[in-house]
Image (cartoon, rainbow, N blue to C red; front, side, top):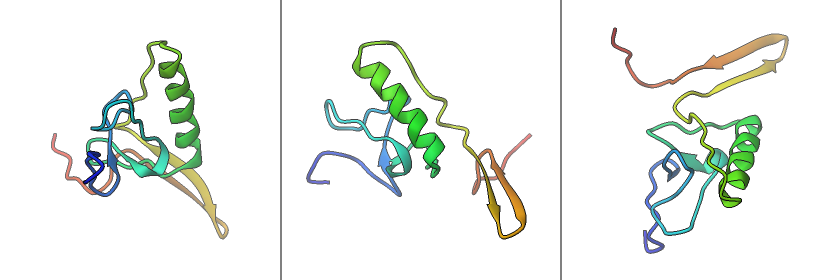
Length: 90
């Protein structure tokens, strides 16, 4: 943490993609928001578009608390939706 940037499994960010260091942002699979790392190229592109808007001083944000991915493994279609690793309570 000599850089002043706090990290866990990824670099901690807020809803505006900001890290704990002034004027430093993180996006894509290196960014961790509320315990979630979105690991898809599609999410990284969305993060990049939002960051571009923020740098142009346009109000924008991404709901980083929900991630999804669709891909094919061999002949099997796989979908990942929502959060993993946490127990959900009703």
